[in-house]
Structures are given as structure tokens and as C-alpha cells.
Amino acid sequence: MNISLFSLALVQSALLALGQVMLKLALLRMDPFSWNLSFWRSLLLNWQFALCGLCFGTASLLWMYIIRHYPLSAAYPLVSLSFAFGMIAAIFFFHEHVDLTKWIGLILIVAGCYLISK
Image (cartoon, rainbow, N blue to C red):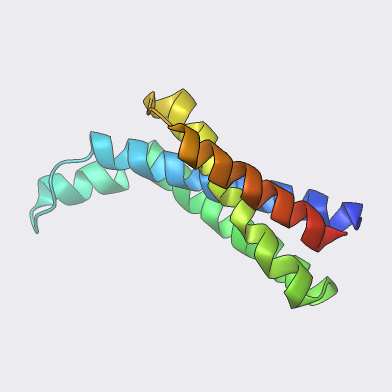
């Protein structure tokens, strides 16, 4: 197993999932979309929205490093680890219910990522 690729992919996927969580939190706090000053103020003064951008930007820079140094055929499927982080984040942050079928799908994604990174 290529530990360094898998480790980098874990960090990159965690950053993507954290960015999605921050985006959802930001959207919950923002005014409904409109072309007025109130909406833009709620957008630009929202720290969750700023953190979302920081997470996505850092994940993008890390992704550039990954695809520069590793085969795309091995790296790209590992992005799906973000689905695992996203589902776990949905449970902890938003108290969403996850049924058995989704857990089985998650196990299959993680198993596939493990096999690809071997």
C-alpha cells in the first residue's frame, strides 16, 4: 500500500468534507438569496463561509500536489473518501439518520479505496 498517497488523500478528503460542512453551516446562517445589501453582508461577514473557502482552497492545493507526484489512476478514486467523511460529518454535525444501505455503500467505497491504493 502506498501509505503516503493514502495519507495525503485522507487529509485532502477530510478538507473537502469539512468545506462542505462549513458551507452548509454558512448557508443556514445567511439571508435568503437576493440582490440586496443584506444578503451580501450576510455572505461576506460569515466566518463559516470564509472557512469553507479556506478548506476548499487548501484541498485544491493538496490535490495539485497529489496528481503531480502520483498516478492519476491511483489518486483520483481516493477522492471518494470524501463521501465517507461527509456521511460521518452529516451524522455528527447535522444529526442525520443513515440507513444500513448507506453504511454498506460506505464500506464498499472504503474497501475499494484500500484496494486501489495497494
